[in-house]
Image (cartoon, rainbow, N blue to C red; front, side, top):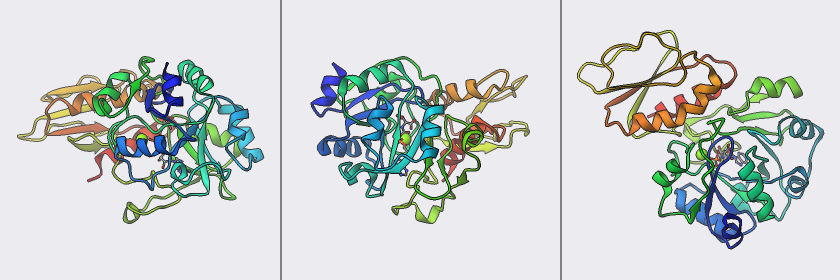
Length: 313
Ligand code: TXA
Ligand code: MG
């Protein structure tokens, strides 16, 4: 049913292990354009192409270098997007005119089943209005995009909870474009040092090699303030405050709502609960959300990245 809808050119959201994606047939330009329209996404921000297996991936890219093969063998299916030289038939709308295409095989039984049934590559950005908080349940998708898309395939809450790690292999040195659900340390253990892309806020409206690195992104409507991991969380006089925290005992006084991501501070659990907790605080009619940062290792790197962008004003 969902596969048939995608083949007909409709927009269908589906679960992956990272976040829900808004799917469209990558070979149908009208459908791809529909994604930009429904998300109100700027056309300089390219889309990730999703496929079911390596054979399908090879049809998308012009070159599959050894380093890509190593990463694919180790981490696909999984929360890793590789940017590789595209074949000419992949439209400029998908890649925002860039020579590279972002590609991944998701690790979710429903996603794989869907991709196999569609039999074509499927573009899928996170299924939320542009710049907002990514959806980790079907309900989140409906909250953000209901009425603007044709359907949602419900696969329950996402396991990983953070978007894929994006690594570009377009340059001599592999380059990290977005930290995500696969820790960068795991990638470096397989291929050695990966360069970090630096984002430049003055370039926010321009096409750039890492167009997704916008300073403000993943953002709730409520003001968000990030505190260092070891600071005491305190409310602000006269403001209705919420707290997004982890591993904290006892909880500080005076907060209207506290979202505890993990009692032990386990980063996998923090990641899995992160966007749902941020949404819950955002709908609690608060003046400010105070968020405790994460240790700067493993998934904590991606979590801190999301916090920093969510807090950028
Ligand atoms: O986990 C994920 O990656 C989810 C699920 C649905 O697969 N998708 C997702 O898509 O997060 P989106 O569009 O919300 O974020 C994709 C990121 C953006 O930062 C985009 O700029 C970057 O990947 N990207 C995609 N294609 C690219 C390309 N050809 N070159 C450089 N960056 C690319
Ligand atoms: Mg997104």
